Image 1 (spheres, rainbow, N blue to C red):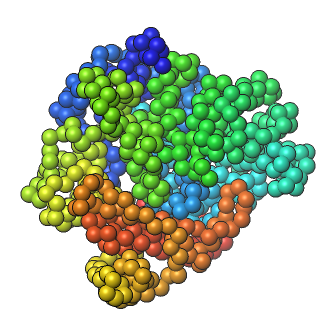
Image 2: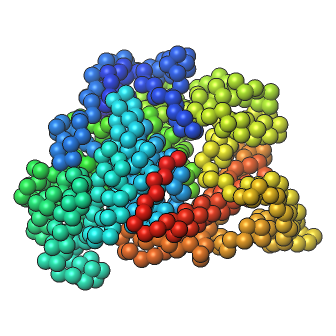
Image 3: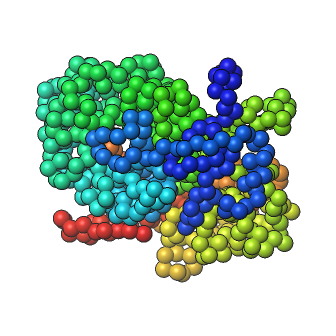
Length: 627
């Protein structure tokens, strides 16, 4: 590693060419102002930018960055360009407790477009009426709105099994986009065909060929086909079914390692073999989809790209079924950092939006990353060892192969503004901009009220406090029930009790009292008494945002309800009982806990409302929804 760094004379990834426009490696491209709580980089005139550049002490090198090629479904004019296919809203949402509301999916999709992903797999429309409406909303809004300097419009994709009902639902959802895609799949490994499908290989080929042709017949010119469990499929059979679906009109062939079984050299050889032995492969794009069951998803994905795949399927933070998927941020930054060893490959991702995208997905999905998570973990750019700190103070390239601002991360100790109870609106808003947030006036006023409540109790409000409060205000689902007051008593002298006052959907205040095994249990029972929605608490966790007795507590819960099972699993087709996550933040742990519980309850209320609304729509009619 040391010799590679010395030979390349590159202390970090910052000197690698960027997509989009020519840049100086020391200076970071400034992202556009973004509405509604999304990321916005600090203005170019901000003196902190130049301070960061001086601190990095890197040589300034001008480089002409390649641009994103014009999108053509079945080919890429630049052989070094790699398409990024993001399935956070589909495969990522299959993580237990990761259910997002339609409004949350739309917000995340907007951010994915700003991030620069080429294809957004927005969901599995046949799974539920709510998912169909969510995908349709994304297709209408995100699939028709240019973003960035190059006016990028992402492809909007819907997943379907190989049957007409699923394909019809997918087409109904995505057809409103400028660039719609249907992604259909069927299992091809012997174990899946025999035990799950109970079909012969000949029947599977016939179904795949017929359904790809059916998708094309609907008017969809961009069809992706996936042979599920390709990693364990017979090679000759795999070549044969891929040849047949290419003839039927498939434009992208996705090779999934569905159960995360292969090793990197195996998966790389699989992609190379598909490229070398599939007749007609020159008329389609080869894609990867790697699960992380053995912790090899990113390595397998990179091996696939090196072997010839030019579409990589990933999720933000690596979320997904079981152990998750290949992580977008890991794959993208590895390609950016080691481009010279990957044959000059590059993507269209604006990496400065990675940090905000990660935070947004964490808050909306309820799945927080571990501190040591590569690229976006809390410790990814932390240096505690004395030897490391000494090296960092002398030259940051000694221990950082990636600069924090390459991914839009701003370290708190590089800014001079310290907030407290005397800080005014201008100072607080300036801090938000420095941290990469741009919010509306209404959102800011709601946030500023919460900020003042905390600032009255704390001498100094840290950046971590700011982000926790902002997430609690901005990244919440549509409010059906809102907290007014909560009072709890507990201890060893009697039963724990709690009184809760909520404002309901009708605007009326409702109060309930209850007892429990502790103050949180008592408060949750009081909430249940008011809202009258049967729920089961599956997970409860609390973390401290900062050190000290006055730290803000962030609570995450996962709840389920037996009344909501109107969803189908993408792979099995079985109906399942959805889990809903919620998060809340406050200096009082009971208040934080109630906020998190209400967040989950509001998601349930939103989902139930969408199901009821869909059931009232006459059969054959569609409703266009957009936020």
